[in-house]
Each structure stands twice: as C-alpha cells, then as structure tokens.
Image (cartoon, rainbow, N blue to C red):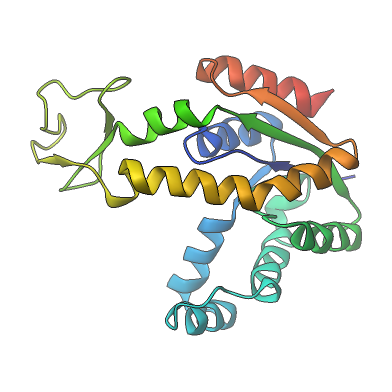
Length: 216
C-alpha cells in the first residue's frame, strides 16, 4: 500500500529542506504545491492556464483547480510507493479532498509531522536572510554569513534583503500561516495523525525525529 505523509510547518521552519531529506530516505516522491503550480504555469497546461486566469486578476486559485493539479501529480509513476506532500493541504476542506483522492489511489495519510518553531525564532531566521542580485545565492547574517559583508562569495554581486524577508512582511506571513493552519492542525490532531517535531534543533536532529515519526 502506498505511504502518504503530509508535512506541516511555518515559513522559516526548514520544511522544504526536511521534506527533500525525508522523501529521499524513504524513497517517496516529494510533492511541493509551489513546484506543481510553477510546472503547470511554465508548461502552459490546461490547468496552468486556468490557474493563470485567476492569478492575473489577483484572485485566489479555486480549490478544485489546485486539487486537480495534485491529483494529476499523484498519478505519475514516481508516486507508486507514495509521496510526501509539502504545502498541500492548507485547509480542512483540502484535507477532505486529499483523503478522498488517496482513497481512490488505494491509500491514506499515514502521518502528519508538524515542524514547530516559536514565532520569535522564525522572525530571526527569516529577517537575517540575504540574497545576491546576480544569481540568488542565499546567505544569513548569523548562520551563513558571506566572507565579505554585503558581497556574494560566488560571484561578487551585491547582497540585498528581499521584500518578503523584511520584518513587517515576515511577521504578517507567520500570522497568516498561524490563522490558516490552526484548523488543519486541529483536523489532523483529531484523527490521531499529528506528530509535533522540535524545529529549533540542528537540521540533522530534526531529520532524525521526522524519520522516527513517519516510520513508527
């Protein structure tokens, strides 16, 4: 039976990094909702074109379009053993749709790890990020500083702070995440699937705890 895992975590929790590590260890496809959107938009698929029609008007892409993209992705050969979902579902309604979708595919959600990090730590992590203008290489003033302040080690271009890494934007992103995800956390807790992981630990320790949670 295929194994499906839903990974939750706020911006700055290292969810993307951990998703790749864990999916690789378990031999599962890593399905990022952001990647799927970009793939469909770039390839100008029917779903991508439909999504674009909403985005250009500044509207949210309806659930049925997002769900159709996820369904198509889960039916590919590399998902035969299951998948780790990152960025989907975002709401209880999407979680219901996912459960129905996985039932059609002969499986269900086995575990929902939540990488938990206090808001003040998230702000520190995200507001310290700097990107280079030439190629987007990423640095952090505390955790991964450049050799010369304000200059990229790789190509010598200027480092700058992206708008979405500025303090006021970061705090808003975290608040939005908490509002949107709280019902989803309650949804999976009620089903006995949620496992909280301490995301303030070193990357390798977080990965160990995640693997232990999803293989128990």
